[in-house]
Image (cartoon, rainbow, N blue to C red; front, side, top):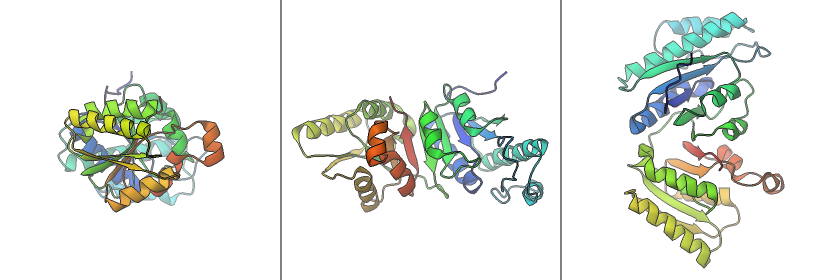
Length: 284
């Protein structure tokens, strides 16, 4: 029987250099959403027997020595990989308890690839938190495409945001994202800069004004800006850096595959360039 809890924040621990950042981001989101945290670890595929270096990712107790022992092996057996994962999950739970996190914390030890684990939690999770660099040869962009719920990608260390940049393009996904932001307590206390990159014409001005009004009506502190620029990712990066904004929010891979092939994916460019937490909303 599955122990996956409904509306959880899922912390993906398959990124050794970002385990602590993922936990910090998950505790922040869990507090805002009043939701349990599911600590998820996917055992590396049977084809990848090399040891994954989790040593020192969390300095909690003497079990670090055991993780060091696993890392010292060039290859691990299937049973050793499972034990390593269980040790990591135990340390992650202890780390959260150390900060007296009030909401329920539970573990999900999956014997499958991370992509299959993301698919497993998709329908019940409220938010998935993942490190910027994942292991097991998983491609971060592919994992995001698989998700049906919002994903928060974090660098290390995680910094609690007080402001957010919402990229709005007047497409179906951005309208659904806007509806979600008006309802979720995740960003309720943040000042949101709603930014549209495009021509300064009546259609774009009206769409931006309406989106801004919806956020204001929902009680969210916000500002609006229309940037006349051809390069969407460059414009968003520039605006975020100029205003020192701590969280980037966009739809995920909203362009057609043909446009991505011809001009490149704005989502992939932003994943590679932003240094702040990045909240991605699934494509409609």
